[in-house]
Length: 599
Ligand code: M6R
Image 1 (cartoon, rainbow, N blue to C red):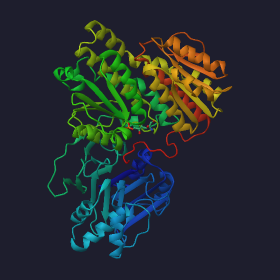
Image 2: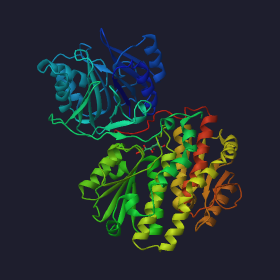
Image 3: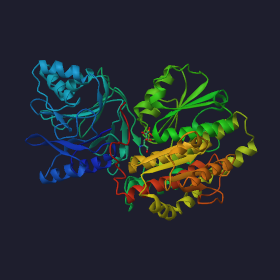
Image 4: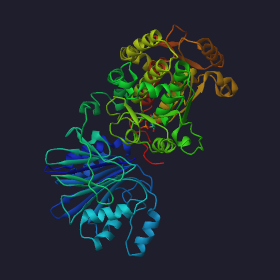
């Protein structure tokens, strides 16, 4: 959480920095601040609340600077207030530091520094870094060396950037477990937690790796390891269209991203030919030997993983264990060596997923990651990576990443099944042909947006909602509930249809909205019985189906294992419209940040 932005070049960077912070506001938005170089020295401005409050200050101060670092915060240590917002400075206010992550040994460092006479003003862990640099500068006059010496003393996760007024035109940066990417322009460099922050200015990106320490001037970006050995890092060309990081006339990023889904799945599917080596980079001989899958993820990505379990089990007849990464990483697992570990993550930076992945790697498993952010940490730690090609997902509530994750996982399940011989070529070809039509089917599904809006109007005053699904659509019910609760703050729960009679039915009363997913398939009749049970108790029933059914919103027909990709769309829209009707801050819901890069 938290977003870092930096600029070092020849232009006045006030606008560039504010634009970058606005792009990263999804990472945290309880306060923001900037440290910039002026001819007279280093200046720091901070504002509580949204980036727009800082923007006002920057305008009032008529900031003109060619070198600055800035931050948008999501509080971890210390409440959101001006004193706790970044940048943090040393005793003499000559060094300024911004940070994303958690310095685990900050209390110990603070005690040590306090004994040496350093004065602290905030409750944050970050402030120690500015004082450590100050301390190191007493022995070591070189800013970069002092910065490196400070970084050496840190334990925990960090993306850091620092400036020092006695070393103008230099930004020092370091990365460990929190993302940091450098944008390369002509005679200028950008620094950010995520690419959209500078995508309007350059599409050349250098992703720092764990342990990297960078020295950035307008002319050069030199990267070293902690021992001072120079590191070579690739300059990636980002193919994302900057327009995908704009609202494009929509009221919120979330609704725009819902409508991006035909294109996002089209772009994703276009990289998934029916050839496992080409699509997943895994040789058929390796695929043949896979005896099972561990699929691990968090939040929405976890729901995609859970749905994939049903698909793999059905077609490939392999055992699949799916778990949230935060639980998986603490379990004592007797890893099956011939199972493949699969990590699913939009950001590729989620700390829990990364920790689960490294446990699996330590146990000797091969790992496949399915991520959206190119060059992020999880793909780099994996043996194989398949990217979803959604473009930047800005809204905190994940939508287009989910449908693309489902698409990748579905393709993988079919290819696994075919290579392992559990489905014939004829069946594989037929299923794959249907799979390739997904973008058009999503497009058709979105045509019902107005109908969903009408339904939302009928239920938005309710305070409690139930979602039901079965089989591959049970995780979609969980996802529908998650989407609604995270952006509307209303109570919403998802259940397996067959489970409600074991308890949850007790909470159904007159007028409670129940949204049920009922695709044509093996459990259709059973789902309809569950619907009748809740209707009999007065629930306002909304059914999402692909076959004519009472009270149903119809989505195009597909087999029941592909249905989740279409079935989730009315639920995304419902969550969006209900929350909009309630006047919620849809793209930046309270207490949430887009990527959870700390535990
Ligand atoms: O970036 P990731 O896919 O790893 O993120 C996982 C979850 O934090 C994320 O899906 C979260 O649950 C979203 N807010 C859901 O909309």
